[in-house]
Length: 249
Image (cartoon, one colour):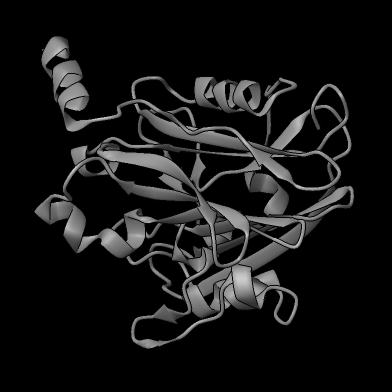
């Protein structure tokens, strides 16, 4: 909750490889649905490496529908096909299907050897937020473990879900199912503060290791609709990206 008692959500991405870093957020207003979405896209023309992983690194990370906001780390937000077969998604399928059922259609990401978990947050008008994850059971067991958990988020401390253990460690490892006796283990408390969406966005951006942070965005529910910040992108062009890399040499 903001200091004025309004619910908020935020999303941030980081990257260690050039392909993961050459990304940016963009806010769109969907003329067909009258609702907002935030897209994770390429910074400039996608590289060949990015094209190979496009379905994993480019996606809508936030979408609203009838007062509910869906935040995820992948195509499970609103894509209805995965590996050439139908798959449920949060934007059109949540309600008819549970979060666990939707993530069960997708499983963890096929980005060997990491096999990054797929995560999701669903926040409606009430006090509760729903967190969910699909993770690989273990390095030796490729089966999928799904978990979901509803929490009251009316207190002043932000709760977030992370894909990696040791979020701030340089060699953070993705969660595995054997680590998750309780989904609460990958829920973290964050010192995010602010009143306006831009303040929440910047607070979220600043909690991530500044060597790797790429972009952040936030939205606040004002009792009628979700009000979005403009995204904060570390780089707005390839020229800015290359200039920073050159300055670090």
